Length: 473
Ligand SMILES: NC(=O)c1ccc[n+]([C@@H]2O[C@H](COP(=O)([O-])OP(=O)(O)OC[C@H]3O[C@@H](n4cnc5c(N)ncnc54)[C@H](O)[C@@H]3O)[C@@H](O)[C@H]2O)c1
Image (cartoon, rainbow, N blue to C red):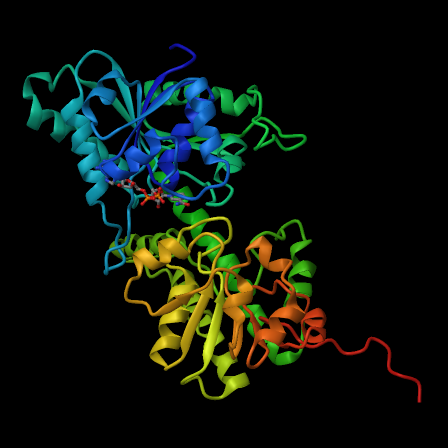
């Protein structure tokens, strides 16, 4: 197998575009395919349809290295490719199951395009319910049979699972310097192709881009090779665990608030234990995004199909649901009446450095406040256009900056911890407001500084500090 391969990536969303750009940056020849013509047109112009720091620069480098192009037609690139990645969306259905419609159409399309000229690997990068590897194999075969039954015995392919662990907002870094790569395949030839594909990444021999420098002491990337089912379980379990870890910090924060402890210090104290680790222990308004909720629901659904009730997963969802209502309680404690009040939300994206609003706590909070008769103003550095377009019925007054958003407001709610919010001029904001109430939903601000700036401050799980030494009588 040549060092560099021909690759097709199906789906140019957060995962597919980053995967395609990274593989072409490493030297492979990549075609990214999407059914959404407008996305493909923007990508051809060198623009990215999503906000992801560094992605446009990486695509520019990808053109110079292995080469990358963007198309709506699947057939030609599939015929020329050694490896075909499926990176389409798998959004949740009302039942909690994953909607596999996009995956099914992509897999059939691959089958319809295949010929007997070469061995190809079809790789599932979408997060899919356990057993989907088998489904993809069956669908590709059906695609072959439906389109050209004469080729049924000559088409050669293997199916693999290669779950994605990137975080939106740091997707380039996570893809070039991953903690691990997980490959699931039963077919030895398919596994061999994928090992070769990822060799440049595993060995970290590439020259790192200036906008995404390699971490100091970056080791070789561990490769976890396993079965398709275990690879699919690894992805779901990782997301379930991370969501549970945040949920744990949130649950403890609620107890901290009642007993007078400071959750940020408690989490530092436990996180320094190597068995626990400090990441994902920030208490706040609850997690959001396109993955945690849908993946936990899907895993619970699979467990249910096998007669198992996953109680820890159920609790994880329940704790998060309640956590999102805490803002409303805190506003009621400070303002009593919410009808007619003006509440300003700082941040709309489900987390900083992305424009992604899928399952964002901001939307639920805004909706609830509007239902309760409040006026909602908002400012987000990146996600306002997306919010306006995706939620035309949500009566939010969008503002150009934090200062104008705070004008005449009765309370400010920090929803997303964008780095620029940490440097806000708090005394200036407080002066602009009708009533200087600050609900710090991500524990971004120093409570003392906020109080000195004139705010009535309330964080998540943060007790007011008592003097350490009792004053002498
Ligand atoms: N977003 C993340 O942070 C993240 C991280 C890890 C894993 N994942 C998983 O990766 C998958 C993709 O997620 P995403 O956030 O990139 O989704 P996305 O919605 O941003 O992108 C999916 C893309 O697939 C395209 N598409 C749908 N059907 C198609 C078809 N038949 N042919 C070609 N294109 C098609 C859509 O037009 C869209 O552009 C999901 O399963 C998700 O759970 C996402």
